[in-house]
Length: 171
Image 1 (cartoon, helix red, strand yellow):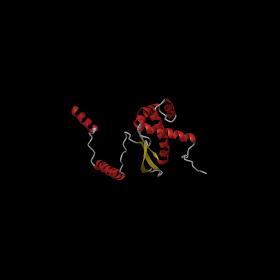
Image 2 (spheres, helix red, strand yellow; image 1 turned 135 degrees about the horizontal axis):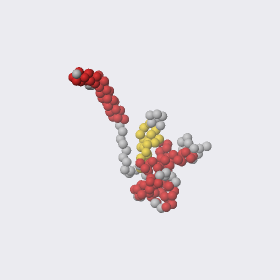
Image 3 (spheres, rainbow, N blue to C red; image 1 turned 60 degrees about the vertical axis):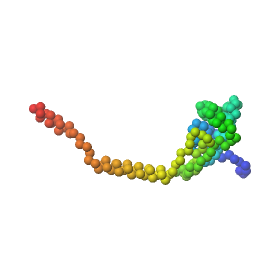
Image 4 (cartoon, rainbow, N blue to C red; image 1 turned 180 degrees about the vertical axis):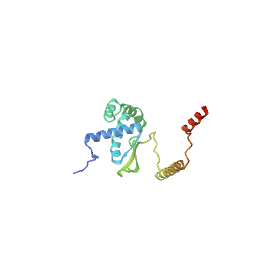
């Protein structure tokens, strides 16, 4: 029975799952926002929140615990030097999840996992405007292609005729 089990397995082995969380969290701290699927984001969020709490403490023991979960030393330094102090007064809730709709290939729910009060701002995407702009651009490119195809080609000087004319002048 599955009573009181909170872990999502995500169809992966334990080692694969843990490494995936490490990669997601490292990317989150590096870029301060990532795009992923909803179940992965919900699990990575818990790991990230714990690591930010360790970064707020800032002692050596906390740094060593965080080093086990963050893959890159540069990102670990950023976590303890910038991200931890940024949330010193905040008691929790360092991340947010924004839903951005289904993925085209498999209809999986995509989300943006980002740090609250981060420097990266979410990009607003209006799919209707984006699609319309793309269609207009494609129509213009098509018109240009048709115009360039139907326009007469610029005249190229015929080297053979020039040579024969020069030969006759020399005689």
